[in-house]
Length: 429
Image (cartoon, rainbow, N blue to C red):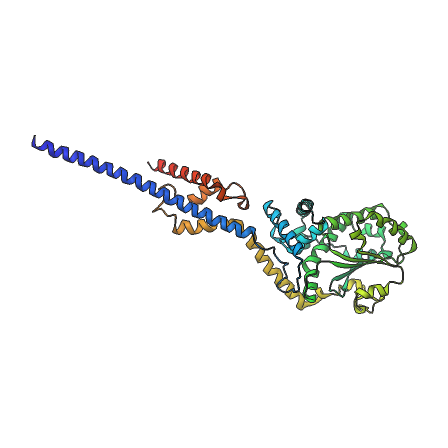
């Protein structure tokens, strides 16, 4: 029939067009998949470069380094610090607040630059801080019994040495252990002791560094043994001292520059000569046991005006409680403390930035790509803008970003992308 040819023509032509349409849709789908994989590879490359920049960043200076000057470093020590820092980053053991060159160096020195032992010491320090709430102890803990404690245990910071380090003094001969324990407890005293260290690092050391124009993170300690009666120190007092020493050694290492034990009697000297044979020579080299003719030795390292009169100095602070209650030092200078607080503010902003950095590394590409590159125009209908970050990356990156090595896992990454594209295509059909 005449119309049959026309019908066949339109049927065949329609099939051809349908076939062409299907082919076109398949091609579009494949093109979209290739486009998405290409952009995903771009994401992995950008993220890899971001992570490399993070891991190769120079060790942070101290928080007041912009003000402190003359921060001279030994090349071998700096190399050791960089290696230590990289190991901590890899193990996720470096909170931003502790990412500080001098802090890392102190721990290395405490373990004689043995990396394995230093990492162990560092991890135990972080655990101790977390368990005892040390990061916020300066704000959270109020030592209400301080005045009474000071009466039975005279101690405090007073002045600086010729190198600008804070001078810490204890009058051992005036300590009354039994009365001390009647106004406080061992646990509360230890918290007060830790709080004192935290304040030294947040206030005294920064202030001294600014005043001396060089980095300072250690003290001169003077123990005045005049009138000391060893028999008055019971078991509780002995245990308290031992616990304090352990806290200091484990968590605040290498903060003692020199110690001077003055007015030491013959019995004390004999005891010391025996004890020092069991101590690390590096420790004993820092401890000077002197008799009652100690003034000339102290004046070699501390100016007369910085020493209280009871130690042969010329200072007689007029405030109630005398020199040990005056807290004399750069940390009492309002102008210096303004600079310290300004440095703290900058450091806190830096900490917030670093703490968010891992999230930024992940989101940096996705925030840009989801808006401008991976759009609904060139992705599968069901693999929308946010699917890349909500489905693909979380599946592939199941460990911390600094442990991700995309360059070694490109095939795996491509496989994840392919599977999600296929799933999206199947859903759409």
